[in-house]
Image (tube, rainbow, N blue to C red; front, side, top):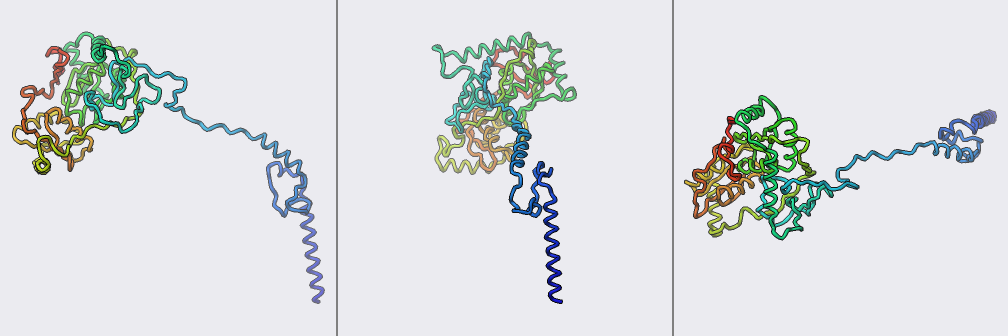
Length: 412
């Protein structure tokens, strides 16, 4: 019985082996699966021989070459055009008669920096402008080429004056001015340009000319640090745009383009691609104030922070009445504190710098978001009787008559 069982098991094993050989040999070597890069498992390898042996190596290589040839070449990835790529393009040439700066109201040509925070890299981009960037501005006259007489600034001023007179033409009548002012009111139009903490920037000039395509006058709303010196804002607006301010009420200004202005012949204004780093200027706060000792300076700073605040500046507010308030406060107290909580540090530093030049006064400290100024030992109030009304602007620098330069809120 035992031997019979063993013989039966051997017969079953032989039957299963023969069946697997028949199945493996039944799959033809020239199957269509090979054309579709099908790799059979080792158990289904043809011929029952070695599992890794290729029965028809020439066919596989031929099929592989056909597959490689049928494959399409991959297209290169899309690369958007770069504004910095100036290959084959000439630099832009402009005949605008003034130096290009990032901000015309917050930077002065009379104050020279003591250093630069970055190399002299033009914010207009490489090889995009025919002017050289000095780190502060792009001058209209090449600084390396100077004439013998040295009257470049006078020639630029004369050219700018003639350019402005040719565009303005005859002055507006009272009825025309009133019509344009009414047309720029908020209930009439939503077009407006916001002049913020950076002041009148270079790219804003292009925005003003874009608005002048659709209307003769544009409304400009001024807020923030530049409103401390609104007279400078008005002068720079008229000087850099060749326009005319026909209305001013607080920080709201209406700028007229001129009778002979042609939008198709507008000046070519190249745009700055990024904001340049501000250069390094001398420190506003010195360790020792001139005329005082170290102990007196420390005591003055402590007393200045303890003085009741004159006013509190709101963020992005209108600061046009700040200079008269400080002048009036100096008639009673020698120290004045202005609360600047919520403002950026660079903003209230600019406020202190403007007060130093306009009042004039001596900045004492900027600690704890406060601006403390001192009137000095020999203080003499300036500008007595010369304060301009909030709704009136008189441009004495151009020598115009009072009736032409006054900007009344009524527009007449």
